[in-house]
Image (cartoon, rainbow over all chains, first blue to last red; front, side):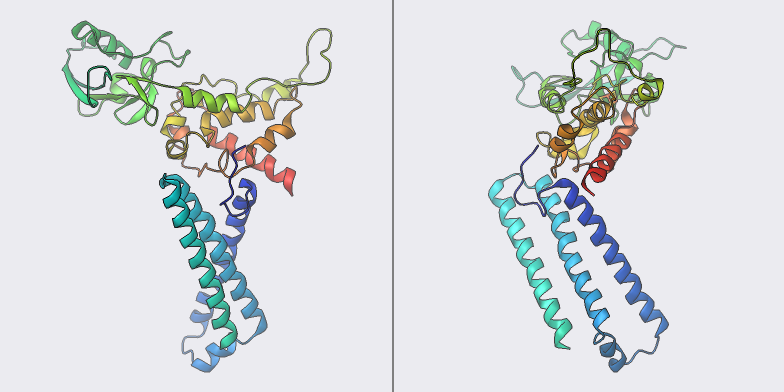
Amino acid sequence: MVTQITSFGRSGLYDWMMQRISALVLSLYTLFILGYLVFNPDLTYDQWSGLFETTWVRIFSLLTLLSIGVHSWIGLWSVSTDYIKATGVRFFFQSVCGLVMFVYVAWGIQVLWGL
Amino acid sequence: MLVSIYRYNPEVDDAPYMKDYQIDLPAGKDLMVLDVLQLLKEQDSSISYRRSCREGVCGSDGMNMNGKNGLACITPVSAAAKDDKLILRPLPGLPVVRDLVVDMGQFYKQYEKIRPYLINESPAPAIERLQSPEEREKLDGLYECILCACCSTACPSFWWNPDKFVGPSGLLQAYRFLIDSRDTATQERLSDLDDPFSVFRCHGIMNCVNVCPKGLNPTKAIGNIRTMLLQRAT
Ligand code: SF4
């Protein structure tokens, strides 16, 4: 067993499953937004902000936001452990990724509930 | 025919280089790549490579022929060469000892890690541990592996993490013991594999399936291990 403390869930199986679940959420959300845009060709601002005032859309958007964080963390963590061999540089890269993802999630929440 | 061979003798060369040889092959006969090497040895006796059974059983002469890993003894020149040129390099990703000879230490270490032997704590029966034909059938496509390392050295995930990722060959063997009805260490074996590297570094690139000289499918075995882990954990 290879020990890892910087991976998302420490277990390979858990990371693998989260990667797939988050991918599913992301594709469903993409379909939902695309579908909404296609079925509402002359969209107004009121309609658009009204959509994001509904609780379920906010929940769905938050879920998607968290999925982006999880998905990109697992993905970029894999990339960093493949290609960056120097521990210091790798840890720095992982920290930057972690910070950016956290900022995106927090900022996204502010946008969603600030409308 | 032009044969270009990777040459490196760490005792005299500063860096590896490619050396070209011109050779006339007997007409009307499709030689194996290993035969060509054997003929070249008459020209230049310093060319080094491993070989033993010369019929695809021992797995010693795995090498990279025009960009694809395989066993030199069972790869016809016609299948390997492109534009009448044969390019021979050592298996990628492992340290080169000399010319086409690589240090397989890392590869064997991964093999050792999966405990490639039957573990059974129950008292041995008087004669033997029996298996039904159906149980035995599950080992087909797994036990045939000859550990030639063609697959693992064709795998990018193994190139980047040869110390952490078990690699296609080791995982094929791991599944061979996980699925054996006579083995009782299934749970411990699975626990040893449930980290982000050992199994899960496989991204389904499938180079292993493409090169295996025995026609085995490590990707499928890896998928089966994943399913076993998933079934256990959900
Ligand atoms: S799975 Fe095939 S390519 Fe890989 S070591 Fe075994 S025989 Fe060689």
